[in-house]
Length: 162
Image (cartoon, rainbow, N blue to C red; front, side, top):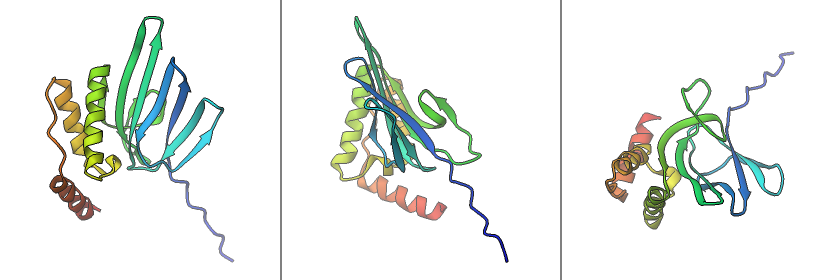
């Protein structure tokens, strides 16, 4: 009799989300999760399969107003892939966009909204576009719009590469 061999579990990226009203907010703007575990009424852990793209928002305030405003768009990594560490993301991820400061975060939200207005899920957008948005906003310039033609080209490229 041949013993069945169990496949090793697919490594997942886990994001620790928290909501303490008016003090700390860690939430997802977009992304297709592979599961979640509720820790308590304020906290939950959300996991993503390798290659999943998601936007992680962190906001905190103190007695003087907003103390932290940040958005990271990350690609979940697979086993053995290099990654950057990001607070509250285990083990970390491939950083596509990392922006801080409320005015720049709002501009990222606007870019996400523009993609959604095209009926395209932001999680399916070409990763290079989020890098482009990061680079343009980092130098105070407006990012170019993401269009259907660019999206079709990305989908074809992804098909050819897999």
